[in-house]
Image (spheres, one colour):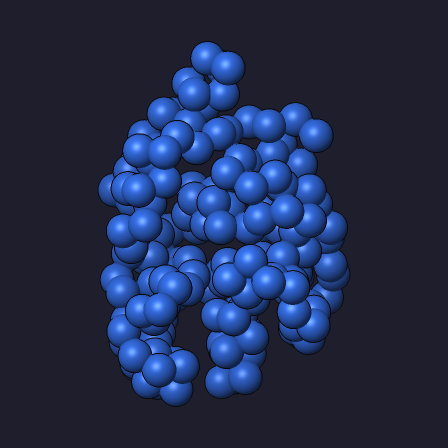
Length: 177
């Protein structure tokens, strides 16, 4: 398993801040407001990162092109989420890192015209960064913000540049080890 990026404690604190728009509220409130934003913005595709947000999107008839899950919620194992996917890819991705295996799986999934579920052995949180970097512009990357709600990242050139800077710091950390 080749690690491409590693997180620092400082970056971990920074990434606790939402990367996009935070929709606060209960599951039903956040999904209702998300659907309103989706209707207004009409994203090219939707990528979900996290089991709870992926499950809630599907439950509300929003089907991500790519769902990235790890069968864990708040670090506790859960029943695997049933998502309508045309293919399922299994990858390893250690906590606090981004592996080459996960990065390539996301790139391939986003290039395909299929609905894909990536199941991560490890941790999927940081993979939202890779999703933003490689998703088409005007896509949405959606992930949960623990105890607060849902974050919607609209993929723009500015957002891709912001993520690229974060990844550059993470790559330098890995090289320094």
